[in-house]
Length: 84
Image (tube, rainbow, N blue to C red; front, side, top):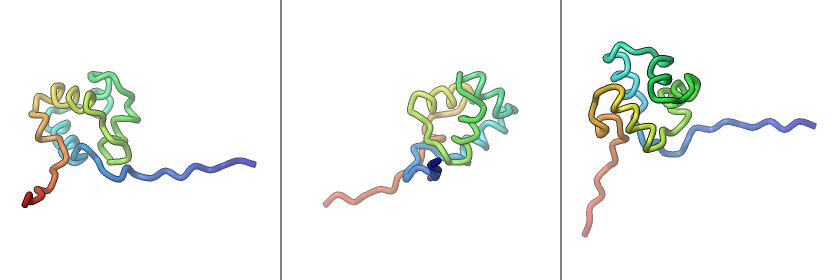
């Protein structure tokens, strides 16, 4: 008997997938080139850009540095909560 694992997206992402894709394209890099530059697999890079995997804080810093963009521009925007 084989078990099948159902893939689910992370509940919350720490990065904005669209922002990473936009910055990568603006820098003129392919997913493969960016992945190679920061030391991760092309598959992981694709999963980060599509929102299937969360970028670790260390990888997000590497991505920002490789794309020469501010880290804050790649991070997930959080809503403000009012403090009484």
